[in-house]
Length: 176
Image (cartoon, rainbow, N blue to C red):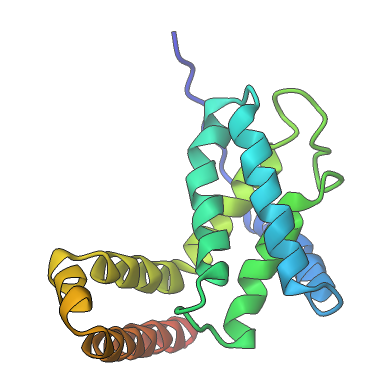
């Protein structure tokens, strides 16, 4: 028997999560990107081995997507675009966040909420990255790569530029 629990976050709640994310964003300035990515990868690996509530397990793929987006050498986000993603990873990796992670069953609830909020805020970046990954893995491109690696690189670069331009246009439109 499942039990549905709906949580409505008020504007005050959202401001609170935003403040926490801003605090994590300040930590990005003093942390090393590679250390953050390693910590996030270690966390995902550990969580995949743990007995977790489904609401947390369902968000692990999203967390892993954020980590992959930053680690992908071909997907070149600017420092300003990397900052919010790194801040989200710092927040989730912090065991002493809003709800301490060691509280069984609930300690990762705030992390799950933060992942959802970050995914909502960064939807344009994530959509563009997912489109790029799908394009990169497409059968015609793999075939081209075997025949002409230079042409493959050129096509990937062109597609990356298109997707990043779309991402930035949508982000700018959203801010208006």
